[in-house]
Image (cartoon, each protein chain N blue to C red):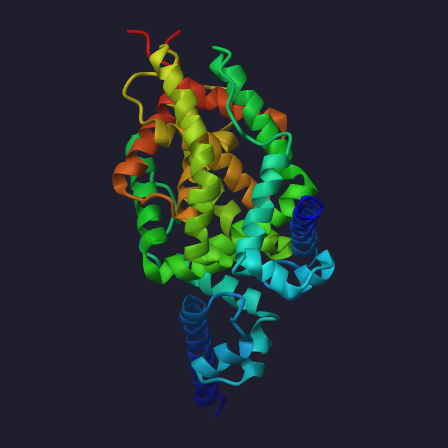
Length: 202
Length: 202
């Protein structure tokens, strides 16, 4: 009996979880973060409100996990930065993929709502930084560190500041929506930043 | 009679305007943007709700003008970028002043609330970009353009992308609150960016 029951309960949990994530992303795109409620998420997902609250303490926590799942699903998400030995090519590939993900409506609206909520609310902001942003930034530090060791980046350059030259402009352009996130833009960004990071002829 | 009446009416309008701006900044810092209302602004400013609506169509418009006034008041606001001929010194002075302003609680909370609202709402975001962001970015284009003409910046470099290497990291660090906006940071940022912009020895 339990061998029949347990997988079904697991399946139910998995289906509910998946439905809640999807409902959250749809709703925040439709009504915005300030009008998002746990009640509406539960109704759209076809589960009870208590099912949502069993897993998440607040709408902020549901949205954070929904965007996190979305990032992990996105084909263009930065799970790792390749190291082919060609730093410019590797960074261009990653920044193009990141720009494509950020520009995609499925990601853009929920991630924008979450970012806005985190900017206005310091506690949520700190969670987003430690849970989403910092793990991504560490990938850049690792890749730039490898390039520094192989002599493609000047020794002594502060890699934390260096990586922000890549991620800061892209992220700020995305948040402001003041100019398009084209591949031509991200390629120019990489070329200009690497001019500054390259070792000087001695 | 009109010579007595007009200045008094003008004084009243000026006082009301000033009180509304101050009340808006205080309230958004206290309760956040989503709980900010025109009613509460009017009550705090000691004016009728209709006085607020006579000048502004929405709470977003009041907050935008309040932050704009604050920027213009702030001693560290970028009204112009000096041109002493020393590009690094001029940019360091401006970025230090900008970081100081952004870090100041009087500016930080209202400007953060406004930025968050603009990120979540495309129409408001477009107003902030054209009314606040773009005029600032044009100052950088002008200063970098002068440096390009005097041979301190490589010819052919896209100045719009170049300026984002300065403003993007600083703004994104401010919005994320993931690392402090120190003068050491902004100086390092300027040095690293100018390494990339400097003409290559031919």
